[in-house]
Length: 163
Image (cartoon, rainbow, N blue to C red; front, side, top):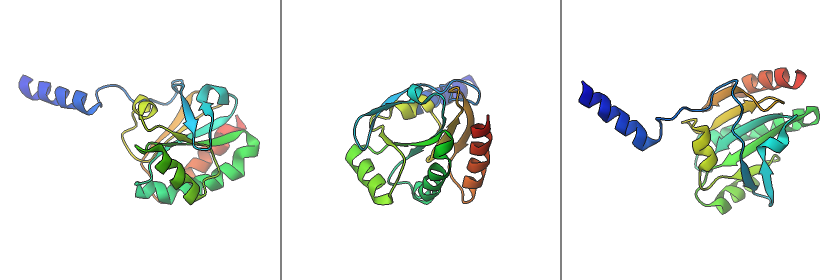
């Protein structure tokens, strides 16, 4: 029994799943990443806005389906103090930037080729979405994407924008 427990713990450590993932109500871990269109963006500098952080990759089928919905949400709520940040995790940042351009993304795309931010958030699914309130606290987490999830995103965005 002890041997099995130790083996499971070692496997979890090797896979990077032994540390705790982010959770609702905690402060969103700050980060600075390069923007696909140039320059850097720091999450802490977005304080005062509701921020939807979406972790995605060009090879992710559900990401491709989700992106048009994120574009619509960005366009609909940006005047109310809301923004979408797309964190691309492709190994080659040029590929992530080219995919974002090809998909017509209208929100900032950040490049996390080293996956430092992705490891910090440790969400364990692709795509993953984190909604951060105006005070910089994580309020909602979504691991993965299914058709219709954008309805839930919109309900949560409306709630947070009104606060």
